[in-house]
Image (cartoon, rainbow, N blue to C red):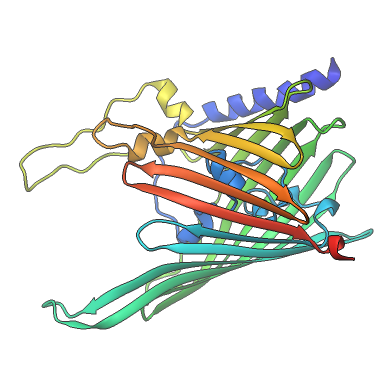
Length: 343
């Protein structure tokens, strides 16, 4: 009974914290690649999972405390064919040091593609490109047999044509795993930090962090796992105001949202079919993405995602696909292997 109450205590905490969001959210964040999903599995589960364990090191983007001794000598690579000519990827390696903890080093890069350079009168002068890079150093250490704490430091380098900027972001997290391994929970404060060099002479800005709380439960007698993550906690309402159209003379109004609609936007739901450790099929639902990116009240499959993973010999492959809007779908590919396998 005590174990059961602890498990559902996480759920009650998650629901309680999601209610504590009454202020309007404001401001914009820097360095968009910090918010892109690298993991194919997390993509399939809705794009955000703070309480999920995975051997692919790209999961550390969502909670650094997931890193443990299981990841030692793990090598992970991910590639994402995004939208509008944007491509990005991740590479990482982890190593466990007995008595000290586990460390991982990751590299993320986003290429935004080539753009036409032109004068104000439209005369073309050539081409330019843009990209952003993150180096992610993660350290985790067990606090007990069930709890692990982790920290990621992420120097960010951004170049947009001739304009350059750099800053430092960080993630701090806790991860809980039950004795039977069926229940996991995670709490993480993501992407807080500071810009140290701005793109121009403008003042530097802080990086607004945000809190995520997630749980995952695998059924004891059935091959299913359910995952639930609350995102952007304490960030205020995720509602937004659409601008008025001055050209057409018409006014665009945002749909009136109920209290339930405002709360549900903070959650991401995932469901997996896991018949063995070597294969899974996953699906996810992101209500916020569905609400913000649907077209003229036509949602279709916007906000839904799916994917699968399987193991062949020493390699684990994963694929995830997320539907952002009616005209855009991202494709995520991941591959993981362990250097121990080649001894």
